[in-house]
Image (cartoon, rainbow, N blue to C red):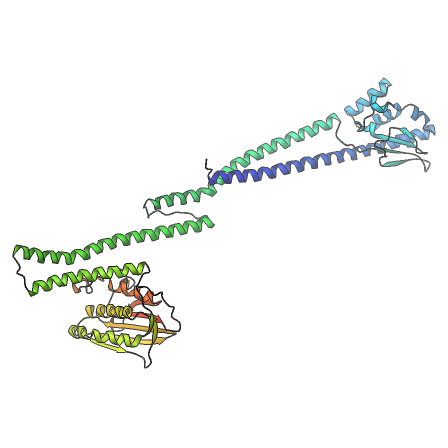
Length: 486
């Protein structure tokens, strides 16, 4: 059977607090017993002082201890006079009234108690010669003694052994009451501990339960779930991470759905055209001829280009972009690409130019991929720039980087669309739309190529009024070689 974290935490807290309560109870009991014994000893010492006065008065009257030795009941009578009212005093008065010593004062060693019960039994009186007048020596040693004086001269000594345990009924009753209080206090503490431990364990594990429910919902595909936790601890950070994960999964799911929808739409357009041409041929509406073959060829070419673009993007996502890295002269590659697209620019009525430094800019990369990048960027500008406009490519070396900037003239791109230009299948509505052709994958592939070369690419508003694309590549001495894949 699996035990939840809540009950594990409850058991740990309960065990820890019970251990503390048990330790404190033992310490308190030990301290109370020792302290109470010390208190009883102090009280008995005070009674010994009073008995000392009685004995000194007795010696002043009789000038000897002889009668006291022969009649110990006299000491019992003196003890009864100095003791406070209570059962102890009443018991001594009964002994004196009966005129018979208790069994514990008999001379028979077998009847002696190693731990005398009452103070009178632990009292020792010695004469001036050190002989025992009353009481007996316990465990071979004398207690702390006080001097008995007569006319400034020591005529004897008196002492009492400290109590080893409580024997008086009233003392035992008091201790019993204290023990009952301690037990009741411990039981109350245990009950409070159980309640508090359960409440705290439930409260502290509440974020974990929320996280568990959220993760289960994520596993079932509900990416809109969020965890609301403001505990200010590690669980709050974990909740934030789970929320970030849920948000990312939700965005990815939305992008996937949009991606599938856009791909289906992109495929449907050329297929519809091809189907119409073929149905026209089958029905005899259209006659086979050069124009028909050209239309069919253009439709198939568009499908092929779309499939190839999708394939390149997929390989880029998987990190399998085919790269043949070597030293490249970026300026020469750019000039070659411009020359290859000069005819298209002339047909569109655009002025195509390049500004480059006097020295070459060398990078590490794949020449075919760099030409593919330039082709995508130039086709994008030529396709969407108004006739009579300009397309300017600028090359420069800035902070150990080769910077390629492409600017075109109007129309421009809305500011809110700049951050999405490199998204797959994204098109800016109005002027830059499907009527100009293209699948909306060119800039997305361009970003994959730049990232494969450890570069950076971003879009902004061009000073010419159109779009500016800025690309940075590490110069050769700072470039990081990409794996060569075939």
